[in-house]
Image (cartoon, rainbow, N blue to C red; front, side):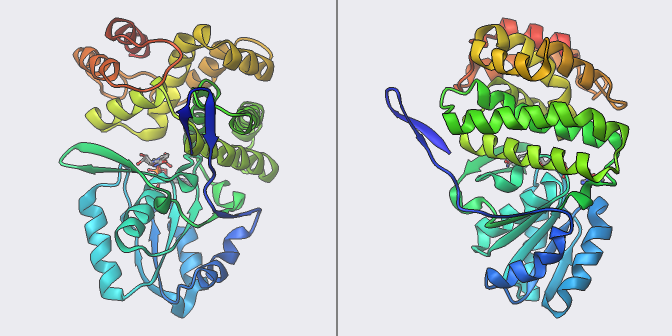
Length: 351
Ligand code: NAD
């Protein structure tokens, strides 16, 4: 994380984290839990990660205290409490989360309540595993907190776990990761380090995505995409996010929308809105895309076989203006001042 403290002085901080990268890295998970001092772990998974979780459960053997397959999007507190009961009954002393941002989020929510060490094994490109941020929902309201203690101490990136990811989720999740990199490029607290991470992430995602969509089970392409998503996650952790993440947060929380698809469909519209006011980011993205970033990202987003408009996600048109007003009223950094009028127009275009 970095913060503005003294005029032009920016502080760049990184979180301590041990990261294992490479095909087959998941097989090191039992040893990694031992390294963290855990003797009996609670394994957390989402439905689609069941096969991978089965394999991990077998590998953990007697070190598996219990397993919870009920992680869901937006980390509802009721689900966390259910998992917490299981954790206590099973007397677990460590956490392993395998799956997308939903499983990783549940691991963070349990770790922050118990202080237990966690190993995160991500299977999407959401990036949550390297951030000190936890979003939780209760009674339909999503609140977010930031604390270095929330971030998993060990992250295991195994591209083999992503080979079966359907093309639709691949595209949406990769654009979700791209949004972290793009917002890092125009962040007020960008540093040479975050610029390097964001540029490499955007290059890897935009350069690597077509090959992965053409051959979803190709390991080299998946490896490049996963590693680019890791860098994008570091951007999310280290810089202050702007209009794009605010819109996704408010829309997603208000209408309970799928996380990655929402990010994917919003991104070209936010690029069109912000790039004229963010010449440094525009120059980098033009170099990476070899043309117009809005057209390139828009083409990718529209190629999604699932919903590509807010209307298709079930957002009512009359809901756009109140969202724009909420977003315009909140203080957050953005290269172009987002007043309610212009944000409504942006949302109308995405609708
Ligand atoms: P997700 O974890 O909900 O996964 C989406 C769907 O894809 C689920 O049905 C899941 O089971 C399935 N899936 C996951 N991996 C798969 C794979 N390899 N193959 C096939 N299917 C797979 O969605 P997500 O987009 O990864 O994460 C979204 C959640 O993460 C939200 O709750 C969001 O708020 C949170 N998030 C938090 C941060 C943070 O820094 N705190 C960052 C990003 C996302």
